[in-house]
Image (cartoon, rainbow, N blue to C red; front, top):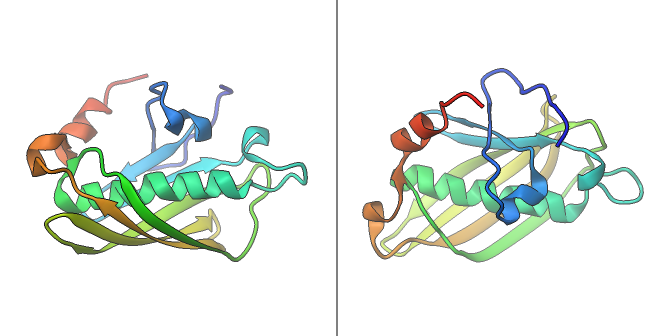
Length: 157
């Protein structure tokens, strides 16, 4: 993995050997009100035309939408994807920084409903998505709290 300059206010997401590493290096920002995830488009994210591949964009949104549900329920845990819908509006090229912004629309006892946008660093809209995620049966006991997640990832790399 090449060295990247992490945008101000963001942290590098840990590489853990799971499928999420396919779009690494990924950055994130967690505040009291939001989760934003992104990456700088590189050759490994691209198609033969030098554009970010739709699969990389969908992977970023799947991860980010799930993180948005977890943030809303206050715990980062497994939230299996039930459905996703995507609308591609523009392209990102190699070298572009792209970020997924997420809004949790509704949380029930068993499901989380979210929507999100991928934008370029300059704010240009690339993709719109919506998703439904299954909540853990164990609720807040099933994962790590938002605060603990932040603290665990404060360690220097």
